[in-house]
Length: 158
Image 1 (cartoon, rainbow, N blue to C red):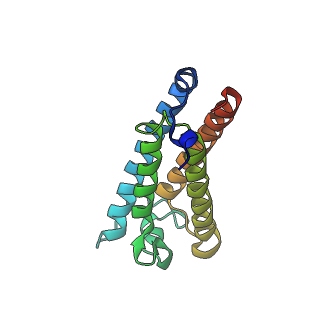
Image 2: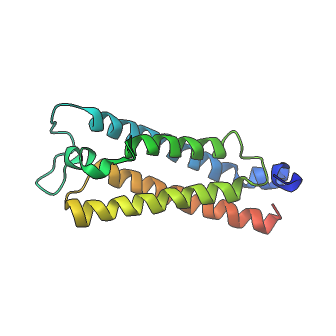
């Protein structure tokens, strides 16, 4: 890591983006909560009416499908970790010069993964999960806000 990457952002840049970092942190906490509920549904042994809306919406079908794990790791667990990283970047590390780039890269990776999973829901499983769609909305919001943070950092010189 170069000295410029670990140096703090200017005070004006940090203050200018404070509201955006707060919004990202709040969305990340919401993402952790949604992912935690999804993880609970993944490991639940009993079927539930939770998230059952007709035949096209079933969180249980999606959360227990073969696509609900990657190399044995539940996708919802990956979501908890991913949102945790975003929360850390938006709070603990927000004053570092490299944070806007890292935040945008992490958000874009999360968005790409969420879009892949949404494709699986719609075209392979043909069943939608409200928790998953909620997570998609959350990561879209975080990605947009992270993009704004990055653009502002470039304009300020961060």
